[in-house]
Length: 145
Image 1 (tube, one colour):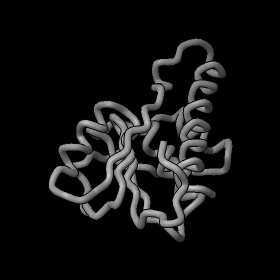
Image 2 (cartoon, rainbow, N blue to C red):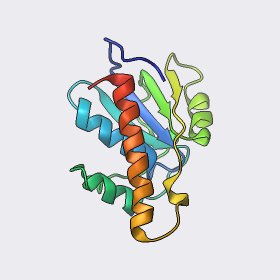
Image 3 (cartoon, rainbow, N blue to C red):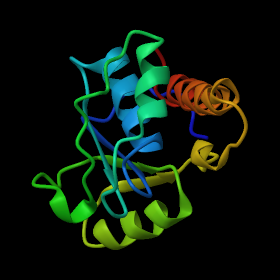
Image 4 (cartoon, rainbow, N blue to C red):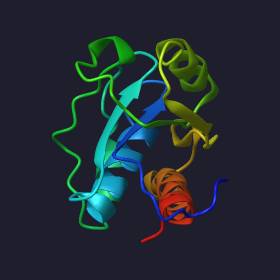
């Protein structure tokens, strides 16, 4: 984990496997904190579907993620990101290929997959909340408040 620095990146891209849970959570959490200071986006190694549990737990903290449309690295129109933060191994490999000819900094923050959780609806939501909160703490540790 990198330290909080005085110089924030101008543009950050978060990446996970399907751009349906972890990277959109990171994108929307980061936007809520740095909307006017940092351009933020998210992608997946491949595009999937937005996860309703992810939308629900973000809504619990006042962040509406319901309009998120999952996309992949290939769908990006803008490739000028200072930093790509990968949240899954597959995304980290894809980010390395995508950024291979640029000066983009890569970071890998492995996050658990809440879609693998089982049990009642509430138990599954708890797994999503834990990932949301873990991502939020990591953003604060890396970029400050």
